[in-house]
Image 1 (spheres, helix red, strand yellow):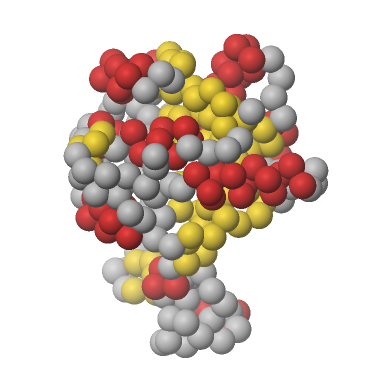
Image 2: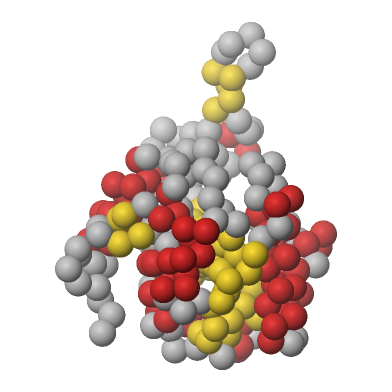
Length: 244
């Protein structure tokens, strides 16, 4: 069975206490736990955190706690360092592992089927470093991205002329997918972070997409409504979940 590393700290700049805030009647962090529990291939779930409230919710769901060191709990700490630390703690507990599932406490847009699909992709092809959930967001394509010059003028963020099919129609250029921070299935070799590709170096170099619609992690208030919309579209309500 494949272990899970679930990460979430107590501090938050955008949405205070977002990892434990109620979303449709449940703490946000319970959604990735429920998805992992209902996967065909997932085994033990490990929770890396510094927060006593997060730890308590984790214990209620029978997850194993990893005490995250203080240097990995500040606003300046990099997620990649948290992931490597968590991976090493899992290996200390379980021994060597071929792959693991990385989930975030502030992400509810997760299905067990997508977790299973990613695990099966890595099992079927040893050359793949990772399988990662992506969502289509053409409205945020590099074609539309801008930067502000030192003089205060709006300029293209990149050379738009270099993109085939670029126009004012957001769907004319090549489809623009974003890693939506819902699911990451990672080979152990990905923990050689220096070999990965920015910005998510823990993905390694060869990743396959796990397609879904509207995936996101909550970093700002508007993400709450988007997450609730996704949950309703995926058969969640205050009273019920799609799981038995």
